[in-house]
Image (cartoon, rainbow, N blue to C red; front, side, top):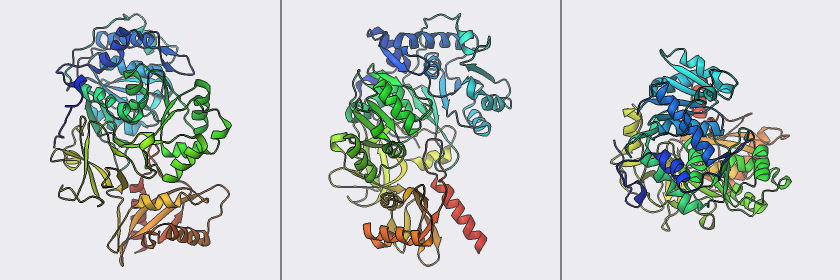
Length: 526
């Protein structure tokens, strides 16, 4: 159940003792980067030195006042703000384990996380403290400390008297640094453990060899820092090279475009839905500073890639990663991107496509994606799911892929999203990609639903563009359109028009919810 970990190509992590805060922050000061901008925010900008001193004060407070010892878990909750970053580093410096949570989670979800990770201390933005305080009322001996408010009990007031110097905990490279919870795309969130070594190893793979940023870049993006996609793109990657990050609390397409224009951001990490959203008004903003655009979280439709290229002249860098694997393991630099393909396996990783028995399938055959590299899945207290995700040392990501002879991987859907109809394997993602090119379709999700004659049929849940009237004629129009674009057996035999699609807090469509709804409706009509 333990993944094979291979760091042979990454000398910086081939050590026994490692504290990632030392590598990312303390070493930045030693390199003379102290006066460089680290974080830009509407409330004010922070230099590396300012962040370093704040983090040291927090670390001192955690140890001296709250008795934190190495291995204690600390829950963080807040919007993307420099103070949240300082809390992250403060916990890591003291040898604690960070459990960063999405500020949109409610008490019930926080109780699940706190119980699973055995947390009794939380550092929380006062604006989203209520749910955290409610959750912690159910946990004996738990404490919530808020920041961002004028109050004697606030984190800022408590840490003010602490020293700006701190001797980082001498952690092992294989000590747990963070517990990241999955977004719940396929059900209840699961805690995944990542070592100090993992966080540094991730900076040497996808960003260094695919994105290729430099110290003059200003990173930006929309995901919350609680998610590993943002942790890499907005914290680990820029700080490893001494770059800066623009942190946005409001992340609508308009806010992201405004931020890029106002702060001359040059590297953007967001999802396909955000790029589609920005396309509607990108011409109204000056985004000439942008030079790298990264997409993940959902498959990047070829239509979105081409439209973004046409509007901005930039080729989006696509990639796939997972909370379990920490970050990206397949992708391609912009000059190597092929619209519709995810890319090739990243430096440091190995990937193959396997069948149900774990045997590698022939080139061009659809199967399960299996990955090995310097990071791997380690669920917290979840043996059942660990046995499913890691088999024979390989991480089975739950994605269906085919690999071409040239090494490019093509996403076919989640393994539980693959639709088998009349003996045909049909990728719901492929059908979605076609529907999204229709001018009357705003969003869609394709699932397989039970059918006595065919086993399953393809069903599309469609959100139409504003002003479009839904009707049976429109359904037929969309079906005919799909038939005209791909093999006719792949067309959606059922189309349901919906107001919105169920999504996680990271914007991923929860297809399992649509499947559950379809099964429930089927049961009620029988």
